Length: 475
Image (tube, rainbow, N blue to C red; front, side):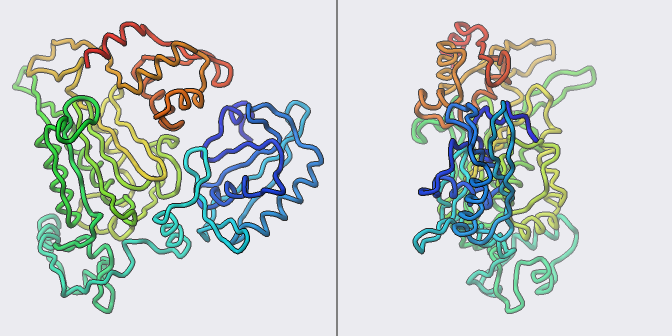
């Protein structure tokens, strides 16, 4: 099994610690059991205190029997689980391993009420309505894009879809056969939700992209701090075209002299932008009413945020990007984008984004249950500005810029190098534990902080804090 020292570091989205088994108030741990079954699975450890010390469990066999009994009574439908005693420092702790379920949603049942829970960071929370709906569809082997809509084929038009298909494939659409085989229409002439999303009229209100070019490195007021902003809605092909056009219109293409002419250097590689936006449109959660894809452009980066996290419940920052499994929340939409030659079926979009960047400026991928963010670095940005149209001999100043949240974390670390992630989140007030981890990762990548020693017993070291403060004040 995993190293117990590493497991004791902190509660995560798939690990939780308990001192003793709560029998009179089992909801305290059963909600986590249900959340694990509704997500990627996970483990509960009994016999570990809040400060991560191993205190052990007495009468293990009795506790195992009680846990098994309570789960069978209080969790519906039945889950797959395993309970294992583990010897640590001459003490026994218990590990309950919950497998990810296929018959979702799994409920905690009490007094005639059934509640579905999901894992949000290191907490188990009641599943919001859109996630509950997605769990129901998942349990029935269905998807939102394959469900019937209220529109019939003859009530809308597909001019843009048919013209795009002809342009990119050199073939025309055969009506109604191709609409049936593509999964855009059912035998009775009713469109699926995917069909509606590709129609010219597209009345699905959450099919939108909000685009903003901010002045600087952080968000502000749309009225005061936005250089350009647009809101687009409609069918997916139009959103893809409008989103890429907005990014292109708010980007610059630099150049440098070469012996035979000049090389063009765009702020953002065109292929990376296209792949990131395609991924946002096809993998987003369309069941979140009032939601939209966001494109936020800053001086130093471009962020594309889509509603809904990874379909399998995992977090992208905890997965090897080169080996992300090809799981599709919207298989019909994905298939149509493939037929339009906008993407491959092999789940290679993230690899193609990485391929467009050098090691020192790699894109960042971050997700939670509610959202997914792709951050592309401005390849022409340095030292609070962009590279000029010049020869390759120019050496930029590489002093890193830091955000307000990063500066606050740096100050907290400077005051207490042994500070924990949990303590930073509590003292900062406006940053979650996952947000702290994300910002620590960014600070380490920028070379601003480094970890000395192990995660449990080590400490943080800040590099040239006074110089960083001067750099921050220049932003």
